[in-house]
Amino acid sequence: MTQVTLEAVHKTYDGGVQAIRGVDLEIGAGEFCVFLGPSGCGKSTLLRMVAGLESITAGDLHIGGIRMNDVPPAQRQVAMVFQNYALYPHMTLYENMAFGLRQARLDKREIERRVQDAAQILQIGHLLDRLPRALSGGQRQRVAIGRAIVRKPDVFLFDEPLSNLDAALRVHMRAEIARLHREFGHASAIYVTHDQTEAMALADKIVLLRSGQDMLDNGSVAQIGSP
Ligand code: ADP
Ligand code: ADP
Picture 1 (spheres, rainbow, N blue to C red):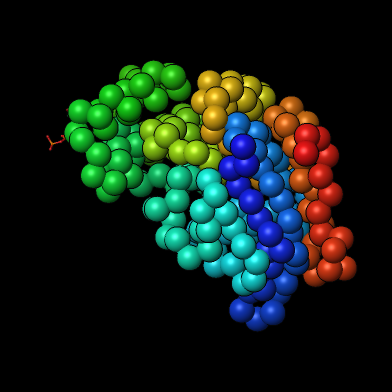
Picture 2 (tube, helix red, strand yellow; picture 1 turned 90 degrees about the vertical axis):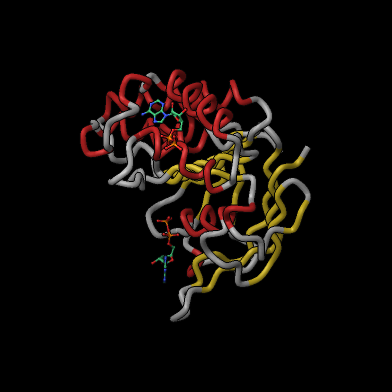
């Protein structure tokens, strides 16, 4: 089953930068897809369009068979993990993970169950009362991942999530992300990186991006791996 479909997707920023020029792409349910390419080639832009954080200039985005171009982020079955973690500094870890679920008006007991489960999986159960500033980079990244997990999304979106960690932790967290994705079964992942090793280690499918500015209309994307 196809989870995410992009058809002839374009993004032109105000000011005229053509970040994405005609991307066609299908990501299957359960598939781990990596967007790989040098800085500035449009990886983040493409990911943010799937998340709903950037408008789509032209083309179509479908998630779970439904056209999503104009659907607000909170109504998409996606959850994003950011490079800078994007935690709320004044909230405890528990509240950071619970916040989105409260917004979605989930039952209080269900929220507690999901947060505790995610905390257990990520081994941060003993830190739930702390504020983000009391944590190491690796612990913060776990919270950011936990905040995505508790939403039980159909699609996980990762924007260079390990770039701010040291080399050893990066390898460790990479393995954890791979394990979590396997455990989630049906959930797809789209993972942005400029690191080839990371891409090779994680991907079922790698989408190579080149700068949208330099591209011919149909030369935008090369795909390696499963169709
Ligand atoms: P990557 O994630 O591969 O580093 P980005 O998607 O961040 O690339 O950027 C792709 C291109 O779009 C770059 O030329 C970048 O300068 C430009 N760009 C990104 N965000 C904006 C923005 N908000 N306004 C204008 N141009 C932008
Ligand atoms: P309220 O203020 O409405 O009682 P809370 O946010 O204090 O709501 O708590 C909601 C639930 O989340 C409670 O059942 C509580 O046990 C749990 N909870 C809140 N903070 C933590 C935490 N730091 N660690 C573990 N559980 C927590």
